[in-house]
Image 1: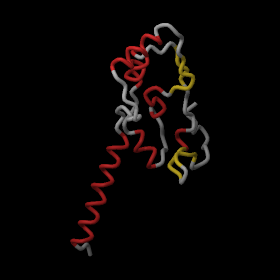
Image 2: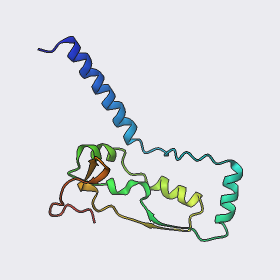
Image 3: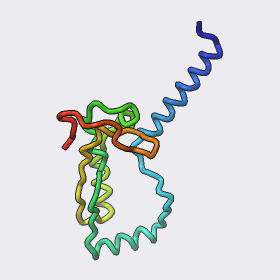
Image 4: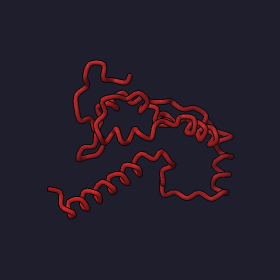
Length: 131
């Protein structure tokens, strides 16, 4: 039998889980802790207009989540926010990036949250690589 107490605890946990999931999947800008002034940005743009800049390992817009299957729960929640390559590439262009090497994440479908962070939590299955 479900008591009022169990119902309230269950409801509270459900609301907390939903809030955590919503916070986790938001593809918005990450807070890096770095605050730039307009002068900092102008100086950076001036420098980048004179030199070659290369991102040698980019994952623009989380394109690796597109068509991913058989994901663990925590990684499935992460992938719900979808991909947003156009925004990221637009930011790269606006920032004056000369070139980027887009890296794939072929093991995305075997990843999960472990005690040490995101890691492979199962073996590949036939056809399980995104590469």
